[in-house]
Amino acid sequence: MHRRVQDLQGLCEKLKARYGDDDDLVLQLEQALESLAANGARNHAAAHHNRRQQDKKELSKPLH
Image (cartoon, rainbow, N blue to C red; front, side):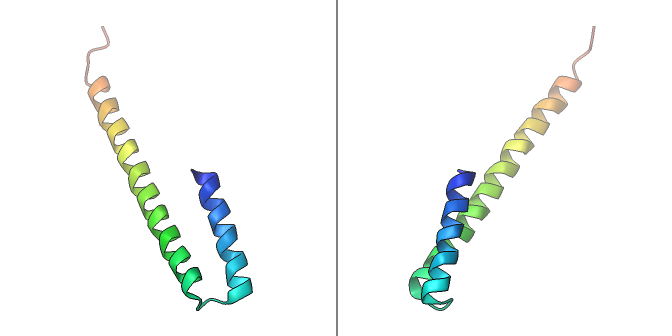
């Protein structure tokens, strides 16, 4: 997924160079990339939160 986002960011830069920052397509692509980044960060944080909760449960078990 990270590779696809990088590819889309590269495409966005090429479109900016060709059509300018104010083009409708460029603006839509930037919004889509921002929402992808926000969703990815949210999913990443949720996955690590669940992992931390599992670690806490495992640490509370007796070692013997």
